[in-house]
Image (cartoon, rainbow, N blue to C red; front, side, top):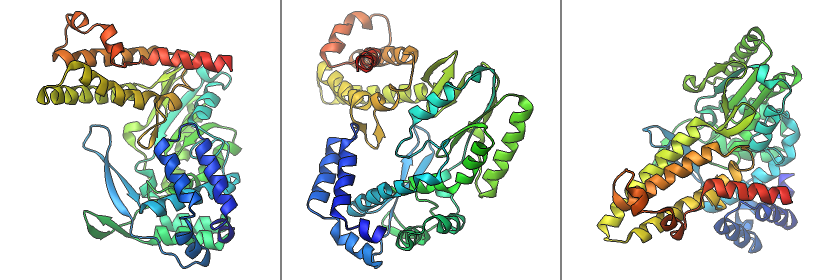
Length: 403
């Protein structure tokens, strides 16, 4: 029960052990959790939560760029201490994991993207099946709070926990550009408990396909469906769309498509074709665009500061070594933890390696031509801490085989 767990020192330490045992947690986040929990800083907020008297502050609204497009993603956040408490509450919500069907893979204690991709790709005769991929548009923040809370009341028997969630979701205030605004916020993407709520909201759909023994997988707002014939697929696709609309949600038509047996299909940033799991085209496109922008920015900085090519290359490699091989890249797992455990080929990694080397040579010369290979040899890139994705992938693969 939340009234006991929220102020239970042993439970908080259990949470600390859980968070710090995760190999991908950043050093900064680990230190933050340890300081907050060891010094019992949670008690200021949690003692009031236990009494049912605490009110969360007005959340801040943030607009986050989606890649390099003009589109923005809306996320919310509370103050730092409230966010840490909500991370603990989201950990307690793992106790309700039994509510979900096995075909739901997002934000669960013993489920992951790796599980989703591997389980799908291991299905017998998958190459002979017809498929359908769909994405729910602006899912988290489009969730109908009235429907969510009405259903949640039947499953969350802890009145204090239910009331706490309801009080957060029903408050329509947000701080934006230093002004208080009023707007519906759905499940409030960005706050820690929103992951559980996004899992919960359309769990009925997951259950339906699980009980029908249909090949179906969901990760938050991404859904993929497979059937043995076009007719069967069309039938279930129409039922899926009908259920999505029943929850007042819309599909993203730009990310909706059918595919035939033996076609390449993509899901959660991965691609499956000819029995191989690789990076999706969109993943490759986005990282190449990011690398190109970084190279141009670092070259401009090098010229403006009259810096050396070595310093500029080291800055570039420091940034991408962290993104590819570090613990975390901002709020995302690095490629070492997200992609490496799942892909079964290094074909796309080779493409990205070649592109990275090309852009690093551009940093030095400002040009794209064959002479760059002589002016900026591979040995210079290595001396400036360049790491090959292909080499690191196979090194990890070899270590996994040894273990």
